[in-house]
Every structure is written in C-alpha cells, then in structure tokens.
Length: 311
Image 1 (cartoon, rainbow, N blue to C red):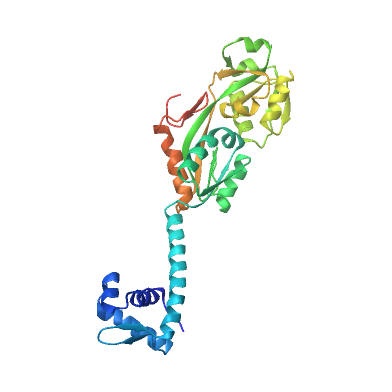
Image 2 (cartoon, rainbow, N blue to C red):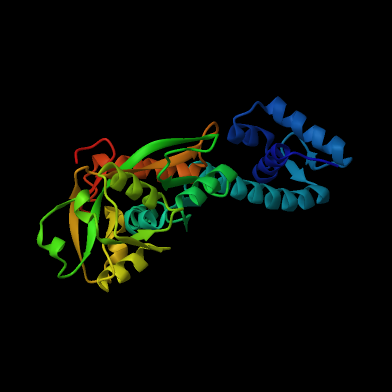
C-alpha cells in the first residue's frame, strides 16, 4: 500500500474537523475533490476510514490508527521540508573556503565574524594552503571557492578580483636601509635575501620584481613559511620582500618594514569559482557579504586595497 503525503494531509484535515465541508474550506479545495481523495485512500487500504451520516463524520477504528500515522508522517515531512527551505535560502549549510595563509589569518577573520553574526547556523571551514592547492580544491569540488592568486586558472574555473596588496621590504632593526622611509627594489641588491620556497606564489612575484629591477641578491636562504622569514630577518641573517597581508604573520619578530617602489609590485587576490553551476546557497550568502564590503567602508590593513579601487 502507498499513500501520498498529500492524501494524508487531506485525511487528517477531515479527521480533525469531523466534517468534509469544514476540511475542504480549511484546505481551500472543493468538497468533491476532497471526497474523491478519501475514497481513493479507502480503496487503496481496503477499509472504511469514516462512518458517514447526513450530519456527522466519525472515524472508524482504522481511521483512528491512520490518523496517528498521518500526524507523525506529515509532521516529519513538514519539519524536513522546513529544513530544506532554510538550506535553500542560505540559512543553514557549510561554506568551505580554500585560501592562502595570509588571507586566512588577516582578511577573513572579521568577515567570518560578521557572517556568523548574520547566519549563526552556517558552518564555515577554512582550508589554508599554497595557492595551487587552493585552486585544486575548488576544481575537485572539495571547496566552494578559493580566495587566492590566480595567474593561470585550471580549466573550468573563473576569477573575480577582490583585493591587492603591495610589497614591502623586511629589514633587521639597525640595518642601514631601515633608516630610509621607503626603498627601491634595487636597494636590496647585494644583500643576503631570505626567500619563500620556489613553489610559492609570493616567490614568483618577488623573483619577477627583482628581475625587472635588475636586482641580484648576495645569497639566498630559502624557507617554507612567512614566520620563518620573520625570525631569520630579525636575527640579522638577511632582508626580504613580502606582500602587505603577510605582515601580521611576522608580528612576533622585531623587524623594520619599509614600502618598496621602483617598480611598485603588488599581487592581486581574487575569488575563484567553478564555472557553470552557481555556488551552494550558504556559499552564495558568504560571497554576497564578501563582495559587498568595498562599498561599506570595511577596513583593510595598511597597503591593502580593494581591487579596482584607489591605492
């Protein structure tokens, strides 16, 4: 036997009202359509569900039993459909963001805080890694979107600009270059240089800027992460050049920061999404908030600007 949720709703309305007329009015359907529905149910179950007289409609014992079943089934159905509706409206669900560590540590925390205040039932996951890994996660579907550099996108992804951050020189305290208010890339020539590993997007930009300025370091120490750069620079083992968003990741180190010009080098960070189908509802809500921030006066760290905005 198989009864639809709609049939159970009709039956329960008649059973509670004790009247076909009143139930039809409640459900806003014709009394004839309501009567046909009940008759179809009785044929399916091969029992009478109501004893009908000209004045009353009374449930049979089988009707009593079906009412208990109907109320449970309809109650669960309504609750689950309500949950589905909240998901589709972007009120529940999970947002998974793949990004680079500097964005995860500096740019995202206040955005996530504001988002959670508006959407407390949405879970936010942040997967911080190298830029290439972040892109791979979006391409594989394990992240809703990425916030990262994206000079070359894998097939099936597209990018929306978000922010750009200018490079600065990181110098040991007491270094002669630290006496200046700003530096040119060529000023770093001949200095021992602390560099992020060759597989880093930051390293690619640094190498490009130094080559453009005709700069060659006296020697390079290559490390795996920004905090190590800070520690080595603070120990006087060399200088470095890094984008503005990573400055907070080096705050533990007693080093000097100076703007780098000639040329001014900046990286542009964007939101990377799969082409075709749009993001899941919860992710769409997060993106709506994120991309509305340039017009709200949302503060950014020094030397970081919204992409397309003034320096």
